Length: 359
DNA sequence: AATTTCCCCAACCGCGAAGTT
DNA sequence: TAACTTCGCGGTTGGGGAAAT
Image 1 (cartoon, rainbow, N blue to C red):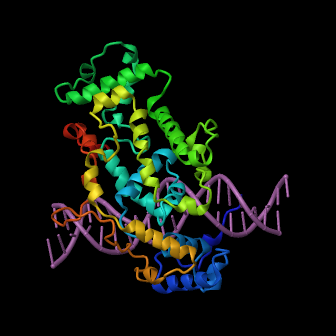
Image 2: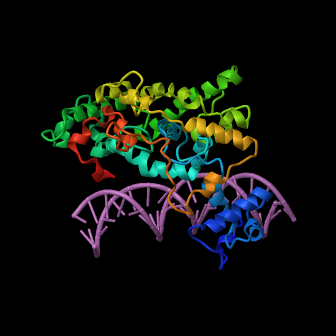
Image 3: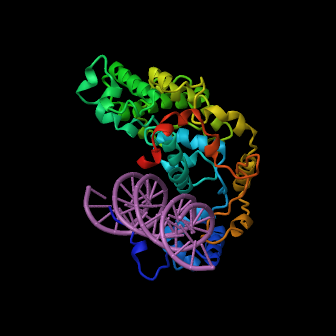
């Protein structure tokens, strides 16, 4: 249908926002709210298009935005939600109080995605990346149906490839034979989603919809974000229990993967997840951000925003990082959550290949 | 110290959905 | 119901700071 012409108008300022512009926008919204973004900039005395104002507000100036690094729990939640929802950043953001879709998207693309790739996990399918060895084309070839096959001979690299990796490929082959009706890379993900959706929905439905178990959609991608039946917005936004609930999803993560694959692939702990091996580490990291968030929310609900924190941030400058969620190792050096990721999942490929070449 | 390369993230763009006339 | 407007989402870009050379 029609396109918004607002950004096409000449004479409107683009690019980074100045503190003065921020102040004008904040003042205006404080007084009048933001009913109509199109007329807002004119009324607020801003030489910006409404779209730019909306973006600035929702992604930066909104008082309930939580700044700083993502906590471990937030990161874990993002990964779990992404495996369910895919790139539905707004839906993911709706379940992470104080985080914007843009922020989550950026964080995913710059941190989590790379980390998963380094761990040999496809960030799209959340499955092991067999494409590292271009196995998919090999596995779909005519030898697919052979009951016995010598992958190392097939690859012609048996002197180079780690035996573990060959076992992985072999295991994958057998799992393919067992699930001949599935296209692993694509359908497996849907399968993951279905499994996950059942469990996620169960978790939220049990208290509210005990009897409505059997009517789950088959395609998770089609489940709107709001379909998880929180009874009201406050409940939806009450995320305190969400990450802990998600710990149950570790089960489907491992269940969804062909069991023989996971077993041969690596020895996964019972409660396998992306961070499986080092929970004790992150549990020791105190993240006060949650309480901070709830303060924000309560402020929010009382409509008594504190703009001080907003104004203290530089205009359009890189976000001021508070240290709430920063991980500090013993030497006091800031440490990427990377370092407490599962070493198990870095498995053997890392020793064989320079995975970065594939990124 | 100067230059280059890398990386992050705020902001933009284009599109589709929803709402309005 | 068509035409138009507004909003919101997801993908992408480019400026600027940090790190490497």
